[in-house]
Amino acid sequence: MTDGIVRLVEVMDRLRSPGGCAWDAEQTHESLAPYALEEAHELVEAIESGSRAHLREELGDVLLQVVFHARVAQEDPDEPFDLDDVADACADKLVARHPHVFGDEDAGTMDEHLRRWDRIKAETSGRESVMDGIPASLGALARAQKVLGRAERAGLADDAPVADGVGDALLALVRRARAEGVDAEAELRAATRRLEQAARAEEQAGRPDTEGSPG
Image 1 (cartoon, rainbow, N blue to C red):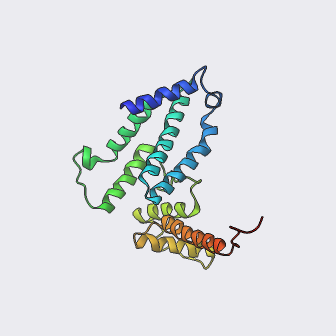
Image 2: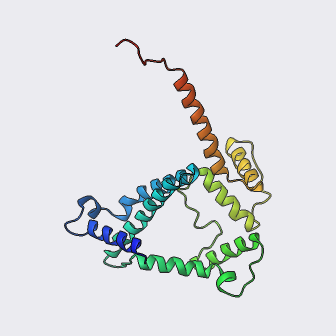
Image 3: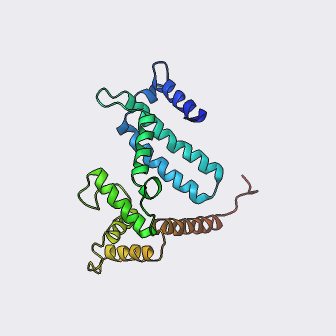
């Protein structure tokens, strides 16, 4: 590990150990779960803001979640593991899922690469369906993109009938976004930000100017 990672692990160990921080010491995987979601969302906002300083800070907050969970995992009496175990497992997964880089398979097209990725994930994870592993906690729009992507690469439900409800209309828009190579989730966030900014500007313009008024 680099000096920075080693220092972060040492700081977390100090916080978690006797004489450290009472709040940190009492946390569990379950109690930390909401923070992981929150930090992931803040990281996306930092990426979209274009601020390098903000991005570095939020990447650090996401890294903290990994280090914190790994420190908690060390204390498990039955199946302990640490940050090195997490990193090794991640590296093994990347090597296994990139045989065109670490093995002798041809790279092929991007579509072929994604199909191979799905196939290897299914084989190594024991999944029975291409839909397995899509988190139910994903936002509806992001989950729709994920389901459509898996279905399309597997050649499933390409001709599924579309009803006239609002949900089906939204799903059709997500399908259109995928066809155009657009991230529907990011596009909706950007459109929502523009609406929010316009609303704030209109709100500010409608406020009476109280500067200099007699008080």
